[in-house]
Image 1 (cartoon, rainbow, N blue to C red):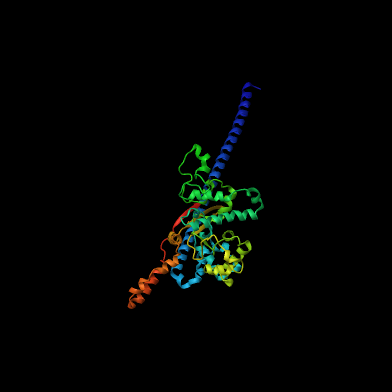
Image 2: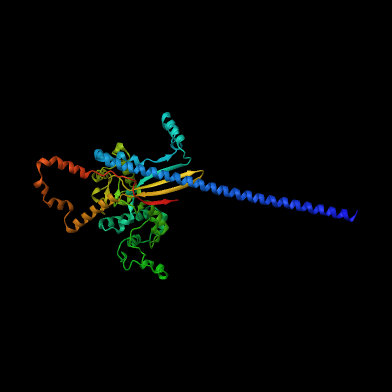
Amino acid sequence: MSKKKILLKNNRGVALLIAIFSIGLMSFFAMEVSYETNVEYIVASQKINRLKAYYAAKAGVEISLLRILLYKKAVASFGDQLGENKSMLDPIWSFPFAWPPSKFVNKDDVTTITYDSLKSAEKESIMGATYITSIETEGGRIDINDLGSEVKALRDSTKQQILKIFQQEVENNKEFEKKYRNTNFEELVNNIADWIDEDKESLNGGDEKGPYRDLLKDNPSDFIPPNQPLKTTEELHMIAGMKDDFYNLLKPRITVYGVKGININFATQDILKSLDSQITSEVATEIIKRRNSPEKGGPFKNEDDFINFLGTLINTEKFNEGGIPLFFDNPYNFRIISTGEFAKATSEITVVTYDIENLVGRLADYLDKQEAEEKGTPKKEEEEEKPDESNDKKDPNQEGDATDKSKTKKQTPIPKGRPRIVLWQEK
C-alpha cells in the first residue's frame, strides 16, 4: 500500500471523529437551548398565571367592598324600620361568595332554571380564573390596643380577658401547662400594655426599657418601646417575653381594629369563654346555637336579652364583674379574605375596613361615662338633674316641626363611596 493511500485513510478517520464530535456538540447546544427556552416559557407562564390569580383575588375584594357598602346603605335606609330585626340584613355581607358560582354550587341543590342562569352568566364573563371570598367582622375579637386605652374600664377589662385566655389554655392544654405553668402571664400582658401606653413607667415596676436592655445595649433607641398602638398583630413578636406559642394562641382571638368592646352576636367560642369563668365550652356552645337559630330567638337584641338567656345557664349576678363592654349593634369593621386561583397559581389578599365615625362615638361615650363616675355622679342622673329648658320655650304650634327635626337628627347618614381601608395585605 502506498504512502498516499495510508494518509487518505487516516484523514477519513479524523474527519469521521470530527463529524461525530460536531454532531454531539450541536445536539448538546440544541438540548441546552431547548431546556432554557422551556424553563423561560414555564416561568413566564407562571408569572401570567400568578397575575391572573392576583387580579381574581382583587376582583373578589372589590365585590366584597361593594357588599359592605350596600349593607351599610341598607342599615342606614331601613335599619330604623326593622328595629330589633336589623340582623336580617347581615346576609348581605356574611354570606360567602365565589366565582364561578357553578363550581361551588351543587346542581342538585338548586333548580334547573337557576343553575342554567348561572352557567349563562359565566359564559358571558371573560374571567377564566376563580376566587373565593369571605367577610368577617372585627367586633367579635379583642382589641389588643385597648390595653393602652384612656378609658380605665376598657383597659382593665381587656387585660382580664387576655389573662383568662392564658389561664384557660393552662387548664385545658396539658402540654401547654407543662411548658408554661410557672410563667407569669400578667407580666407578659403588662409588657404589651407598656409597649402601647404613652408613659415611660413599666406596669411591672421600673423603666419600660428594662426588659429590652440587652437589645438596646449595642443599638440605643428611643423607639423601643414605641409607646403607641400596635400597627399589626405581628408586632407582638417584638415584645419582651412573647413566645411563638403565646402569639399563636392570641392571634385568632385579637385584633388591632376592634370596636372598643365585644359584639356578642359575632364572638367566637374562645372569646365568649374569656368574658367570664362561668362561661364554659358548653355554655358558649348554647350561646352560639341561640344566636344562629331564628327558631330559638336568633341574634341577641340587647344586653337584657343576653342576660335573660344566660340566666338559665349561669349565675348572672356575678357575670362580667370585670365590666367588659358588650354590644349587640350592627357590625361596622370588617375583614375581607379573598383567594384567587388560576392554573394552580394562587394569590390571597386580606383587607380590613374601618368605620372611624362609629368608633369615635363609642369612645366618646366611654370617656363621658368615666368622667361622670370620677365625679361621683352617674351619667343618667346627671342628665336628669339638668332642667328641661326646651319644654319652657317650646311653641305648641311648632311641635310637629320639632318632631320631624328630631327624627332627621337621629337618622343614620347614608354612606357614600367605598369603605375606608386600613389594611391591604397580599400573599
